Length: 343
Image 1 (cartoon, rainbow, N blue to C red):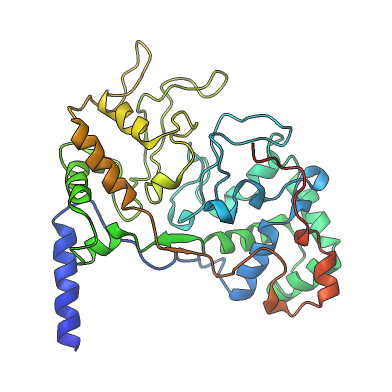
Image 2: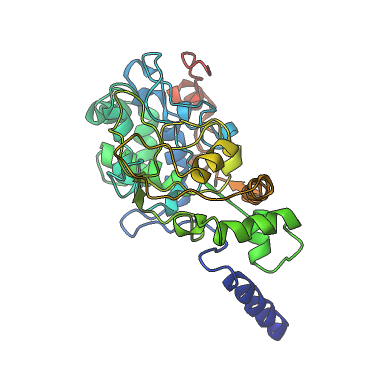
């Protein structure tokens, strides 16, 4: 049995090596040494992720824009702000975010712990000072009990809130796609058109130059000639390469949601971008036939994960804390957000 397993493993590795730059994804991201992901902390983090007291007026939570039912996206072309206005960026999905090397399209922070306060500090998103949010949580009797169990002997600060939320977010994963199964040795997992698309992706089309590794991103920053929204970042700004897992499940594409269809993205790259005069994107025009584009689409559809997971099942008070029903009913986290309109 061990010999057979070893042969299968070597065969899988050899099969994946035939397409350099592509790799399967499994498991969960590692938790940092200074923020271990205990079950209690993860479940507290889930509760805080859906906690509306972390926003001004108690109108929003992280889960308002990152909805589990929509794969931790919002289903919109661009994010919808606190004051009922469209923002200049799309809401990024959070699946596999624990493997990212930086956050936001400009990569301005490196960890999920650093990212957690940023939506609160933005007056167009949650509009609440993190210190005020921590005071609200610290004054809640239920949270006092839960934090004492997860962080014994420590005062409730936003740093601890951020650690709990980050621990939860590292459990949000998507893998076991047809693409993964193919790279791991199941040669029947991809249809012929998807295999042709993968060969184009890794070869003639050159997509793998930036979309590589298990997440299909190089974690770097590039200018690909995407038109910017007036008032947004200047044309020519480099943005982080977006990973492509579950890519055809998204409601829009590019950092600012400029394209609504995945085929439009392929067309964008085929024509070498849409940079204004005087700017040159880091991509060149491609000669892609209609069949080539269809094959690329088939490959991109193969990136949809079957394992779409978080450690816990639904928002609310963690069962692991053995909270009394009457306490659970009184916590703001149990309330729905009535203000958000899924426009």
